[in-house]
Picture 1 (cartoon, chains in turn purple, brown):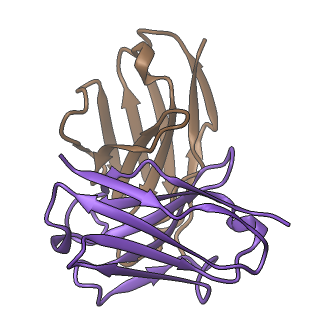
Picture 2 (cartoon, rainbow over the protein chains, first blue to last red):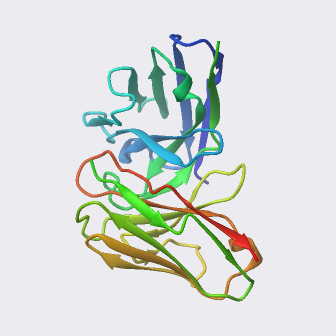
Length: 121
Length: 108
């Protein structure tokens, strides 16, 4: 059974940093691209970042470019999102999601339960 | 970047109805369009990928169509468990893979 379990969320002040983790199991992690998608309270889904299976290709939404860094440890089956210079508008539930196959073309077929990040003074 | 616009933003329907949700891309995305269902407090669920391919395990009352810039999600014979929010997502070329703003389907 595929499982994605996010952790690392919390409450922090503007300008702070946080690292989210997503522990994957039930599939061959290093065969699949992975993504982070967020959802602000009461709002829609926003794609944040993607990383290829090998980690060589990485993409970001303009809203987080230069502040967030996606990475993966294929030896530990963990996806990361390092979040720096956090702003109030980064407040959201952050989901990790697995590519069905390829690199995004065929949708995100498994999602974690999400972890809440709240940025507030 | 490609912008995705869904309509309507909200929709009221009854059990047994047929409903259609539309998604329009700001430029051609061929058939690189996915549909998700999200229920309150839950993660999204992939329903349709590549515009018209039904994801494994998804009931056949869900269908998708379209190509280029205009796409539709159709739900035949609405069931109580179908009342949720639906999102389209484009996955053309390289990221960002933007989502539509969502369509909330409510019980009439």
